[in-house]
Length: 237
Image 1 (spheres, one colour):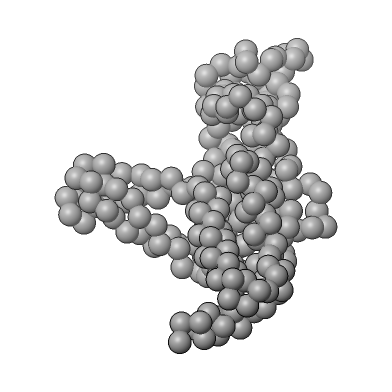
Image 2: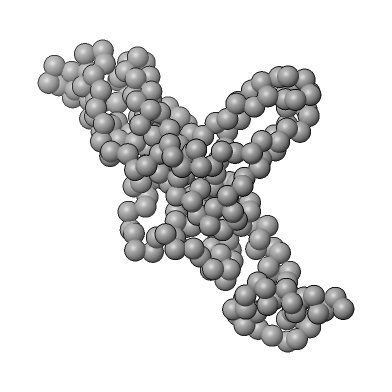
């Protein structure tokens, strides 16, 4: 994995603003793995894992999230155990099989490509059906939409076990009222928000230095952050 520089992150942020989360994830990982052309086929959990690694390289290992308690609206802080998440998931096998309700079902783990195919909005049920590559009963093919609820539930459970980082959730407890609940962590949304905050800060710095010294944006971005900060501190004196 390579780490995009400041100028490249600004370009990625600019291009990715109108894009959905799945495409933003692919945009970032394509910059991190320019030699790979198969990122869209990676399982969602592995994509999340690589986004976590990229976030650590860009912004450090600590990730503190805030959530509102559903019961008393107290703001609750939690530090996400990122290292534990990284230990939980490596690249999983592409193809899986189960037998349920007399059916042999072959399926793959959900990928970014599966999400992007749902251009009119993905629902969990539709995404699950898209992962089923083949189903047969007594030698005859069965359409995914015709599978029983128990079989679909078995496929869903098998996916969760094989790819636990595809859906990241944490148990939280409010220290004020004791209420407990589960909250989801969408790592691409967290990372994109951090990139956006960084981009706005850098652009503000570029604007100040360009106005003060007449420098071009490319020249300012080519400087190290330490050097830019020295010039900014000089402007304050």
